[in-house]
Image (cartoon, rainbow, N blue to C red; front, side):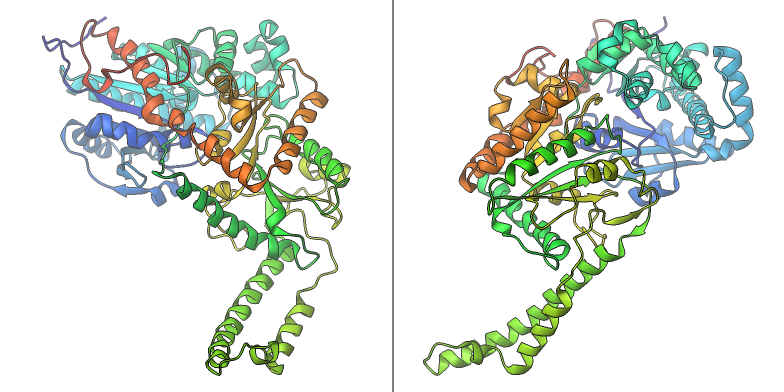
Length: 624
């Protein structure tokens, strides 16, 4: 195995190419991994750090063009001369990492050739109906050509390629076949077989040792993808995955045990004083309050000071993401709270993208009317302020007649009459394409969670990711999370799980499960988690009913807390934030990359991968 050696104990700063199908474009959870990790990576690697991905039309929204210099610039010009469109620049996120985006459509005339050679060399056929797989192959060939050109022209300057998931890693078997040798790492964030079986309601973890990956892939008609995933995992110098749970799947289905586990982190901004993030919670809750008043109060009202906001969010995987369990637990909580009239109200949000035609007209009208009501009241408030000061100037306290003249009273009465609605508040904020057979709505109908006035638990299904331009629930997702009181994510299949971690770093209590990578990691490292706002529900070897009872009981406990107790709990939850910062968790990526470099440069020091305090443990925990 050839390795370039500059004759010194310290290697010159290497180049790191991190390759993913989700650079500058949100497809799944890896987008969050890359985006949140970028600031720490740029601080450590500087201009030696590059993200590589496919170019999509929406990539232009997150991308600022900038032509690179040096060897990378030379290769880019060579590619463009050959007709391969390469977009170079900066990702417009914190850290502004450098990016290379390859347009796979620019090599469209070579797609069939690529499919033929991949079949000839590796025995992997490409079904004509799987258009995405063709694009994945094309991306892999372009990446291979690029890395081969870089390696050939760098001389003794080292480089490393780190691939995320099989979609980005077609280059790994191609590089091996071409005998292009330099350090490589792959991280698998989930296995194709594991995700497929869980979606099909198979009891994956009970029967895992007896499941054959290739047989399942053939039965479910994704053998070509599975074989590509397995090739990539077995070809990389270092194989990593995000959790113990996914490591078991990888060993069983892909035939390779991970060399290192690389838990996911976030770019955490801590506050100097606890009251700062408490104020952010209050401000964000007010934004949710405005939505809730518009959505519910034209039908009936409840006390917002005694209202809690629960939510779940993520891809629409009804069973895998625990949406079924969330709804069932809400039903049980509703039945229990009904015995305590005049108590707490819970508004539960389900944020999960589904196919829809457009906004629900009634939900839209309710928000429009609420906005008009607020604007009218603000104008009246201005007039009342002037009348108040005039009355006080006469040395007397104002009466209602002083503040509201007859015209203003009539205006307010007309608004009140127009505001009142006889219909129930809608459950869904959008018009779903498959309203009758939607799993979430079917479950809500089964449990008669229809937003009746007498129900203390109300439900809002928002089948779209939250964004600030929405006329219905218009705010940043981060603001929404901060304004809630509890995030519930009792996943059945979740290799890691960003959503509960996003709650924790914002001081929001959360429920996850021991079948999620994040939940298993919390159990291992923080034995006191349940008492400090991170509740890990038991799903492994437990019945659906048992776990639902646990979650409903935890929800009920939160409704019993006083405001002061909730504030104290937010402080305790937020104190865990530092443990999930990439500044701590990136050490596992460094360990994986060191292992890869050591195969080519034994005994050498690699500056970006060294730390005086590097350990294989994290604060408060044991070995990973």
